[in-house]
Length: 86
Image 1 (cartoon, rainbow, N blue to C red):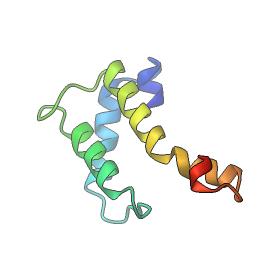
Image 2 (spheres, rainbow, N blue to C red):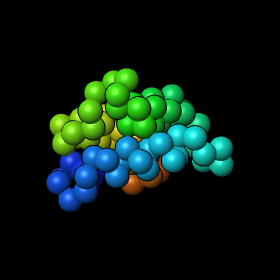
Image 3 (cartoon, rainbow, N blue to C red):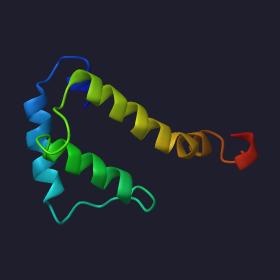
């Protein structure tokens, strides 16, 4: 997705990848991220049902995915951090 957002890969390659991953049964997803990642894979694997995969769409999803993992990343950086400090 970062490569599509920066113009280094075509949206079609990302759609092909999302189609392959979306229908794969062996994909492990961390607890708490299933809904968001399932929605991402569904939208990117079927752009004809949602919106075309574009630079802007990739940037929006990158922001969403990064924001959803931000507290976990901060927890890893400071294992003593209290949730109210984040």
